[in-house]
Length: 83
Image (tube, rainbow, N blue to C red):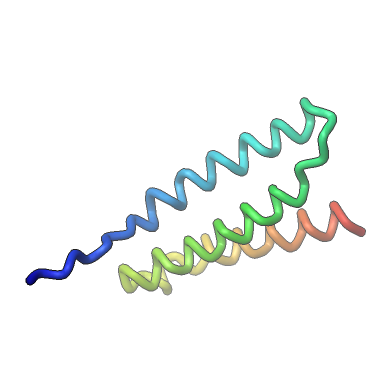
């Protein structure tokens, strides 16, 4: 019996999360509801997904700048939102 291996496409999920962050930022300015927590959680998921994608394809060194950028954006947005 062959086990089905789940093939996760981290890069596809990373791109979808990028679009979701853009949509949430636009919604932040257009609706009355505060969605900043959702933006922070999505940015954290974006950072984790990017790290998983790099580890899955053994490209951590090549994508270090992307991970650093994601982490800086997450920290800055959190800092500016809640302090």
